[in-house]
Image 1 (tube, rainbow, N blue to C red):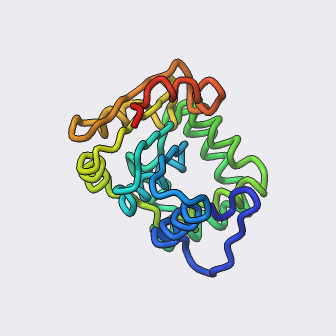
Image 2 (image 1 turned 120 degrees about the horizontal axis):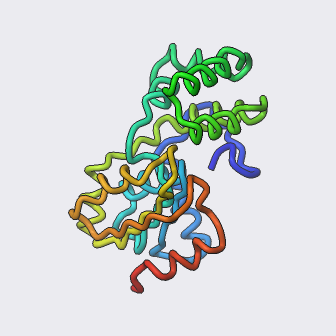
Length: 214
């Protein structure tokens, strides 16, 4: 994805769902595949759901790990979907002092739990991290999946779906998955005794135990 790894983005515009579908198509063409499975972690879950909207007929399994996109974060919406919010976001990237003071106050007043405070602080404590967050959030602002459309397509194409959450995750808690998995499509919800950081070799083994063979 743009701004991840060695990928650069020089289109002078936002990354779109058309771009995402075209990129997935090129990867499948290169490896001579017609069908594929998806695994999306955190923001990658949002992108995986956007691909479901476009390519559901070719997807065998969908694995969502603490996925973003199941509920719209109001701060994310303000920072990416409004002009003034994005300007404030850009200013904060270069001048974060007020942001950090607010984080500390919100935690002290009980408006922000410790896990979310640490996650936000760790993600924004250096200029290069803040710039990366700004670039990714802003460039991916069009990656907004429709949950209802996704559920309809997951049911229509009988896509085996497994969602993993951390019981102690305060960034993307399991309740988001429970609301999404409403019985309208084939889905299994697995809650692990962890927080938001779920990617591990162990997770690969757990996934293999929970997906249906096709």
